[in-house]
Length: 311
Image 1: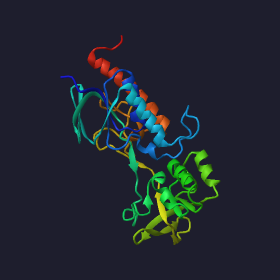
Image 2: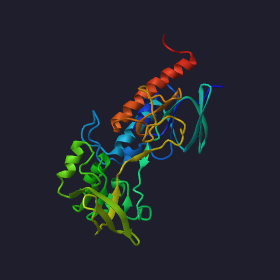
Image 3: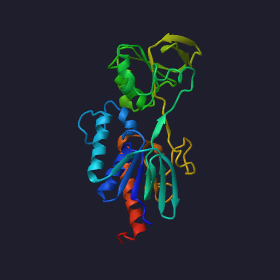
Image 4: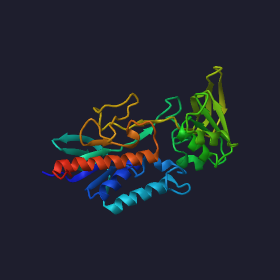
């Protein structure tokens, strides 16, 4: 029996959306399964300014809506559902979801990643009450308030810059003596008068009653701990790949799925793209390129199965 679709894409971040567009444009029957809104982590980008060919900053939401529309216009189908398992029998993959079962010749995993937690006292208790992992989502609630940003990578610097437009009282701490973010993003923070940067600092505890009121810092150079009043804590310390669907696939030391240059995993016909994949550079443009490569290779794989390979 033939499967329902040629290609199923699980997750609709930039990698999944690019894959959907390329697959549908190649006349494949494409289904995208996304449990939330298409766009993934890119949805929280305030100003996307380094995507080739896009003139001027654009919000992550607007950018992803365009990508979704392109995929739709070429014929890709989308459903909102949670994928629960992937199984392969002969040349067919079977995907169990919260809205039924689907099958295909090839699958592209684009499940992305989720924010890491600090795991300190007060973090979980005050999430949604002053603790946040999305500046564009929650920053406007703290306009002109004292805001703490934790982290030192691209996301932390980008989000701190966004928050500095809402308040001139931004404190940013990083556990090391310099940022690990791209130089352009780091320089923007270091030269921003609204942001006070404190290197060699870690957050030990978040305190309050009904909402965040103070935090406990530790200076890792001196060992000194001290408490300070803040109104909000925004945490950007990295992400965890979402690999629960593929527990047996080879992964790197950080838990990201390993693929070859064709984006193919150890399982033939199963591909991984975007933030779930082991890669030296995590950017929207990288994920989109990986999606295009994965679909191109998946299309060849499907042609092989159908006996339609070009010789």
